[in-house]
Length: 194
Image (cartoon, rainbow, N blue to C red; front, side, top):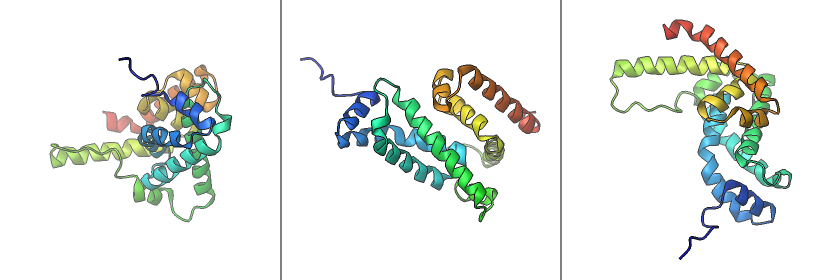
């Protein structure tokens, strides 16, 4: 008996079905991409609650803009491009409406993500937490274009070509942004690294 070729459709196949009116195919896309999108967006905006809200908005955009998806294009690139734009827009919105300081906003939802401390001594945990917070703040202080390139490369393991597609630039420009981001982080985190 041969395996059913439609049993595990690719993201691109699911998007094709969604474009043809099979709305139920959005559910497996959401299941597959919800966690990676939340991680990516969190690393851009630094707030867990905002990352969750924006991830949901990304799926709404995927659904409403499904006709603009190019058949044959890599879904993850399109998805991360939407997420990056949503995060940039939200950051711009917060900068124009500073009712809450950026530090307070980050502390309200940014301190709990990506923490795993099982079996670690309290003193080691405190040092690791301090380093983690310093890295988060240094990454958050990067300009959005540098931060986006860095997060996609280091945390989401995207290739230079994929990042270039997300950021609508050349792979060489991505390489340049990564270099500049690393130089700024090295300068900012130098004392922490020694």
